[in-house]
Image (cartoon, rainbow, N blue to C red; front, side):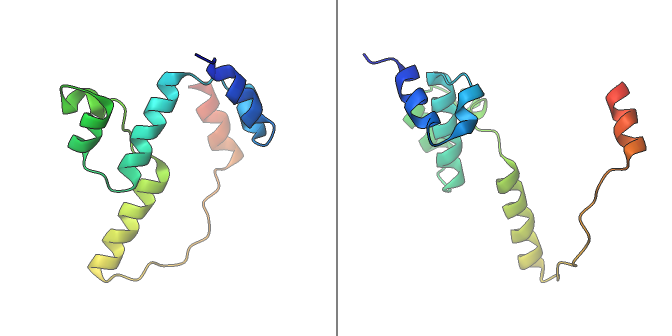
Length: 103
């Protein structure tokens, strides 16, 4: 079997962010599960695809990402018939950032 690193190196030629990542088969498995979830695939089907005996095991693999959360919020606003207000993007103050760094 050809090592995954060979393909990661090849992909990093066009995706520079891969150069500093340690890509493993487990990461690819997790990515596949999240990708299937994003397409709307049912969790029980993803469980079968991954070969898990329990959906509880599959749930460890499929954490929602920020895009999915935004999409869910947008679907709520659309269904509720509420207009989304335009707001300035929030930016933390330097004082807040300094405080958070002390935690």
